[in-house]
Length: 149
Image (cartoon, rainbow, N blue to C red):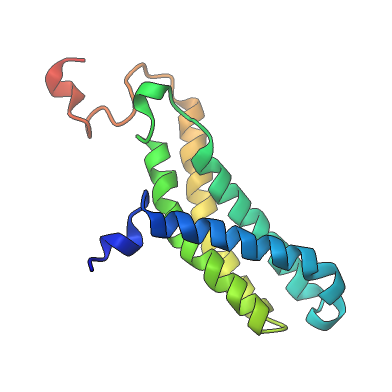
């Protein structure tokens, strides 16, 4: 079994982990008000921040940034690639959250990782909205310059 099975951004494993991660996160968010006293305020706040980061990372992937002819290219490809580590981190964090009552140090660490991903995403989106060049996305990576399109 190759690593592509586990890390293929369009594969069943990554998609399943995203769905499973969101199920776990929503379950934990639902239980958060009743467990707030045992877990503590810091754990609750860092977990909610983690969920917001997960939402931003996953929703940017499913938003169509280009026309139908160029789907999956440019920043859309980057957003697909960020779903691979995000899917694994979501499931692992949800399991750690279930097993460790005051897991705020782990959540702070994971939030710092997600801050890096989100900063890169914001940078790419900033340049995407500033770019008014008529060339299609990934013009040189697709070798469109050689075909004269």
